[in-house]
Image (cartoon, rainbow, N blue to C red; front, side, top):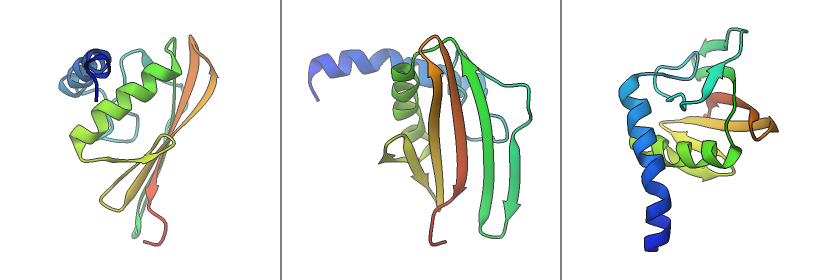
Length: 120
């Protein structure tokens, strides 16, 4: 990683640490930080607990940019044991977290889906 890349990551690492310290989490979870600037939509998250694992679907919105959301979660989730599986997917302890986007920068919707990994 170059000095340029490290310089760009410092603000996101600081924001990630700040979010983790603040205790704001994606609705329905207690271990996926909610990025500053995102807020839950009015509907309640969908939460299922199954023998194979939990399933959570939550939607957030905010006046944020997709690139900032991607950078925030790429920096913060590994601090919590999540491994980047590519294409805004993360895995940890038999679970998969997916981030999907709608809308546009400045009026962005971020859908979070947490489910057991396939084959479990």
